[in-house]
Length: 76
Image 1 (tube, rainbow, N blue to C red):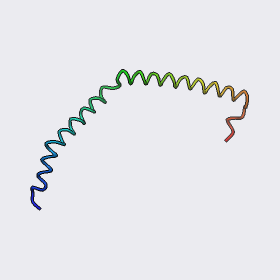
Image 2: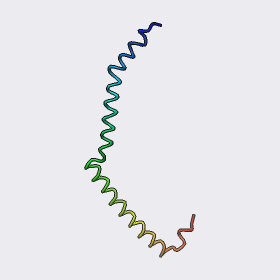
Image 3: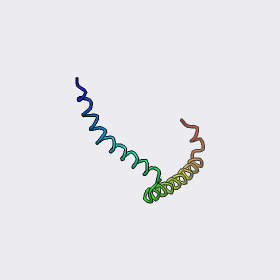
């Protein structure tokens, strides 16, 4: 085997692949460091509201079950 077998792919990697890889890597790092976008923040806030509503519903259902079937928590 000659050294050209290794040098050719190595040059292609260093000229094309490595710079593109570095650019994409640091672009994703920068986007991550910027935090949530406005749209993401709105979605997250909507999910928080829905989770609080579900929590209230669960508490209400547990109160109903406590009144109608007092030992429901002990059942497997």
